[in-house]
Image (cartoon, rainbow, N blue to C red; front, side, top):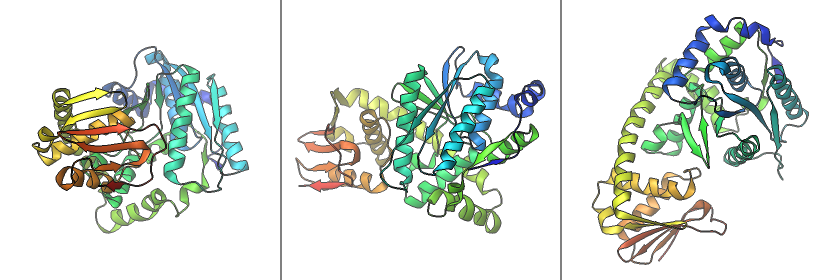
Length: 357
């Protein structure tokens, strides 16, 4: 990473905060989304890039309004040599500038290049460990509306249903903590404009332009093409699509929760679903029930693709009794007479769906 623009001072920010439209909007949006409770202990995930730099500076400035107890977390990925060390130093200096404690976690890899999904999973595990060290109940991330839109396109390209169309949630659980995204209501350009207006510096990660990563190709190639040739407001259109999908998804999730409360039994590391009652439901509700049962056992649905869901649908529709589908992360589905058993196995998960008859 390199530094851009020149270093800033904390004083230039706080002196303008009372009449800063960006902060006023951010505060109103965070209040509307119920992101923070008064006196809450919050861990800020800061990489040193523009979004997380804005996250730290904004919440540190707004800290008195919520009486927040803030600390900073930085995950050193050990993938970019000296640049990664400079990132850590910059984040530690920024935290010191705002008199915030800074916790760091260093990841170790066997390869020089790590898959996006693996890096993401390791990063969240590290943040959860740091939150526990800090005694934080909430982890704040710097994702913006641009990240939200890019994620929707990523899911569309891979193949997705209603869940993927919802993009990045504003709030979601991570073990005993919550992940919140205070900047998900603003665009990346707004963040950078605000930082420049206050003379703020941030780190620039060269890997964010590496075309080997799908998100980078979407950000630098696909989205500009769509805006130029098809719809100049495509980002806003996709964000609206996500809002609509979220509303419909919430309705289905509520119905799925009601169904599970009546027709499912919970036991250690497994759920027992009434198979006949499940198959009588509309397809959309069936899928919502299956998603919710899987999420209860896994915590999230990362690493799962459209093909995984198709395997379970085939299990319900046409596979004989005692058929089994194995999923990533140790989740297993089995038809057992009148029951569909969803079990979280305790040994390493297989890496792709496999059907046994």
